Length: 269
Image (spheres, helix red, strand yellow):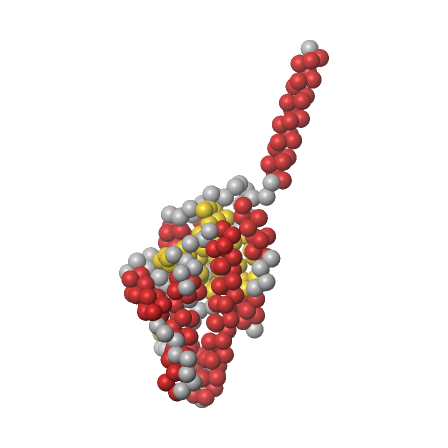
């Protein structure tokens, strides 16, 4: 009997030791978050709580969208109490472009880290659908083949600036496709949900349909669930998929929101 008791005690101790070691073992999501925080361009990393080892990790790079000058001017006029001059609009638009470009440079550093260390080869992009994917890829091909002029004449400067804006419009995933660092950019949007959620203008004002936006985000997650391992998305920081994950009971998905330094600075001003 004493021997049996001793064996039982040893087995029990081993059981608790293994359980403790498993409990102390960091999950892939928390380990990845720790590594992301070490990147110099990262301002914050926020994880959704998860009780088990994740079956999928979604990394959300909070994006600061490029918009055209016309759309920017309309939005600026709507939010201003007084009429702005063309010179003031132009000044603020160039400042906006500088912010977009700075955020994208920081995102590029994060993506290059993920490409090198986690073999990320594709990225999901907001605004991209199955319907506009061919046009997107054609645009990428055009920019890849474009020879940026080296001169400083008026036409050369115009072409350089247009090329710069085209790159910003396509976003960092496309830029890394152009340099052959990413294999592909994947649509994050369901075409119908994306169309339904487009802001509706009323009396010159923009109105967001929150119900349609929630549906749109649900559809994003349905698309993402088709992937495996680490899925990286470039999506506006105004979107937060945490509540969608809870509502859809996707408790095996680790969701990580990553803000860059410039993004944090722009959104806090």
